[in-house]
Amino acid sequence: MIEVRNLYKSFGKVKAVRGVSFQARDGQITGLLGPNGAGKTTTLRMLYSLLPPDSGEIRIDGLDPERDAMAIKRTLGVVPDSRGLYTRMTARENIQYFGQLHGMTNVKIRQRIDQLADTLDMGSFIDRRTEGFSQGQRVKVAIARAMVHEPQTVLMDEPSNGLDVMSTRALREYILGLKANGQSVVLSTHIMQEVAALCDRIVIIAQGQVAADGTAEELLEKSGKTTIEDAFVALIGSEEGLLA
Image (cartoon, rainbow, N blue to C red; front, side, top):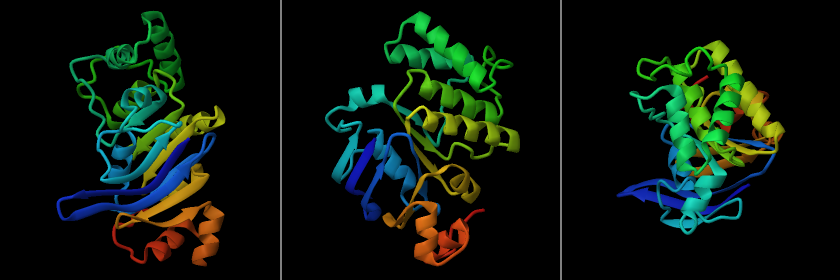
């Protein structure tokens, strides 16, 4: 479970995050929805301790990212906006390396790689060097790498960006499987279909602030609209940055 209270972050004169608060519960998928530049990625980077907040509180499974950074890395799985694969290594070696960083035994790493390769349909490229991989293949390796240590809480920043239809469907099925296992998933996206298909709760962020927070039904009722896309536009008060 993630609890965020009154989070602030500035870069010089730019106030990227201004008082963001929300919860992401276990067994649920929480969507962070907003136009480009809204503060979604900055918020996620503070959650996984890449950036320190200027003020505010974060708790991830009861842990504070500033005080318990190493412990949080063991309970957290992160699929960042930049996939950052080691291109001279195979997909298997990329995943194995992250398992070793988490202190897993070689036997357990092999078991998890076999499971993930099967679940994510990676058999045809698991032993290929990642240089030249398609976007879909890169995303699958990034997800497997993030999940190798079986984290309770998962953060995903635009995971379906650039994926084809079949890869997107497979990704959605995998994310729903995490929810079914009782894990907490935070999904940052600007794709309305993804929000409608996956999210139990939606946190709309605009100009660094929470513009709305609730279930899809609650946001539709609050906005007086009949689709998530129309509700999103109404609640942020602008069509700028909106993508279907």
